[in-house]
Image 1 (tube, rainbow, N blue to C red):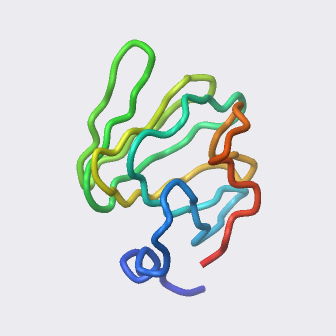
Image 2 (spheres, rainbow, N blue to C red):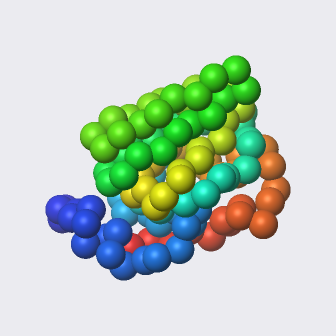
Length: 119
């Protein structure tokens, strides 16, 4: 058992759209990521995802609407819902999702990360 300092972990990397594992519990992973720009449209057939904004803000686009997320706010995207995160400037995000979750869901893309780094 050890505590995790999110600011310290976020200072360890600069790359965008490449989640890093910082914890695991009950088959779920806690990940940190930095977003900037537009991600790819995708969905997760089997997994729900939680996005918690640590620093900055971004919008989660859905085909029929968008949701703005500010620091300290989170959004749960249910399985099967197509979505795309978009960050006009860099944002730091904590993700909580099943270990089986691919960052690009049902889409194989140049931003797909198959071997996540552990910090």
